[in-house]
Image 1 (tube, rainbow, N blue to C red):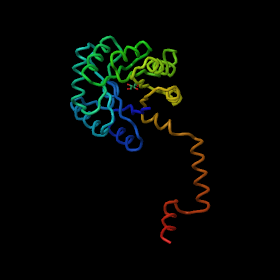
Image 2 (cartoon, rainbow, N blue to C red):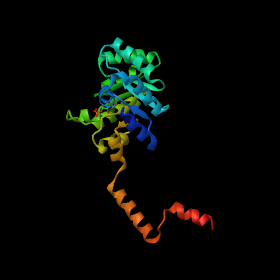
Image 3 (tube, rainbow, N blue to C red):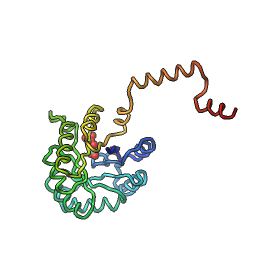
Image 4 (spheres, rainbow, N blue to C red):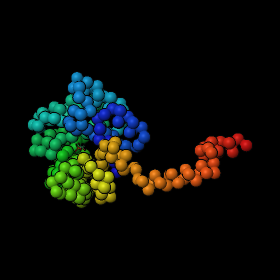
Length: 232
Ligand code: E4P
């Protein structure tokens, strides 16, 4: 099960990767336009993301709409980011064609903004490593985003494809929990969502109780007490 950070903000990436064992970073044109507004420094910013990610996987998306343009975008992204990159291509006809050609060149591709199992199976047929359903966007159509992602994942496994479902665009912790419990192989979440996934008021209460009981009896943290005992 792979967990990615959905961000192009260098500070967020640095801070998050320092404290959690994530598998890499996902971006899209909206995220890059928001987090890196100066296009003159785009190449340098992408290099910085690579440095921050080390050998973790970085996802970056094409912005052309025709297959040849997407392929040119992809080659430039691979050159600019370097290392392990997966090229995100939208699940439109030209995106599938570009995916087939890029996968044939040995470039990792992700079919993104997928809404249906048909798009997922075509992504797999084109050789995509990942297919990314947008959970909350599917929910907003009065459909069940987590259920669609799980169905995609089940179907790909049933037919023996190696393509992994990368569920994206979460608004609630429960959406994330449902796709993971359903066997989806990868999720990408914001730093805020990671905070929600880790926090629980019940756990906080337990920690407060541990601390209260400890400090009723001792005035130092356990490491200092063990150091004292070891030196006796
Ligand atoms: C991830 O790669 C997606 O691009 C992202 O999760 C989309 O999220 P949004 O719908 O919150 O913009």
